[in-house]
Image (cartoon, rainbow, N blue to C red; front, side, top):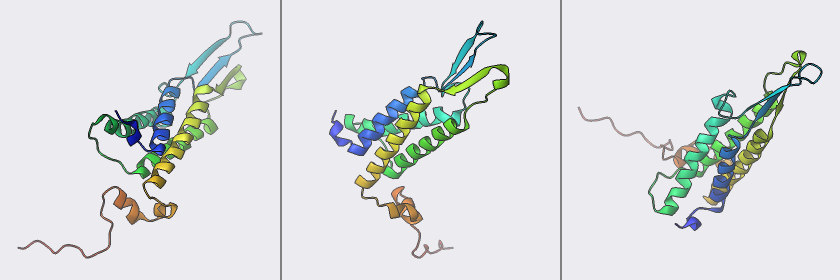
Length: 176
């Protein structure tokens, strides 16, 4: 096992991805009912794997796990497909956006019934981890020779994924 084969950005991305995965099991929201005059109250938690929806947390946790496997397995001598750094940056960036949106949108709140719904530790930890992974993805992108202007050029982005960069003459038609 040679973890030095993983770039510094990759190490940050993988570490933050592990933290995000762990945070996905912690409570993201807590709903509390105080009861009548403080008697008979109750509390319920929800995490990224529960009723919050696949798009908000569990999808990103699974994508982080897949990315971690693609980053770490080569250090153990296992041959896996190599993704371009921009893919890691995109996953972490989107995870950051969606977890921030979940915080801003929140959960249904029904104060008229004495129920309060508040964000919990897991959601805040997931946001920090996703932002750290986005930083790690950006470092991977810079370490691979990428420049910010490359993100504006669709041909360069296609080239990173092995796609046709466009331009040039098309191949001749097949013979009859």
